[in-house]
Image (cartoon, rainbow, N blue to C red; front, top):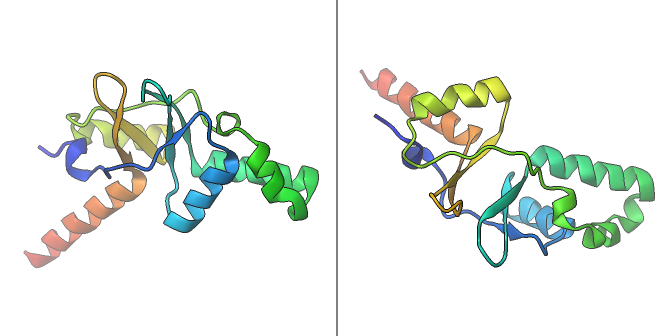
Length: 144
């Protein structure tokens, strides 16, 4: 049986509550990362998730309000917790992908942070991870 641990991405780039929208925007542009967990700086426990959707929505609203010329300035003044989704779901590494996959379809999530029992982020599973798994299975079927 395949588990989340078999397909998750780790280690995971993380932000903490002191970061800004500018930090997140920079990471997503330059590292090609679409989802960033936000952790408490002291406890390292997850407190939010910056999704591609939440990031784009905030950047677009700042552009509409202030214009493109001062976007970077306003991104630097915007705390990441104004962007982070705080009502989010997590998953354990030991969970079966057969249990997790339907969750992605039902809830249209692009990612699920993978946490340990202490709510520390140990990985992230994304819709891309499931597409990669599908491609691997399709290749195996084609080889038969």
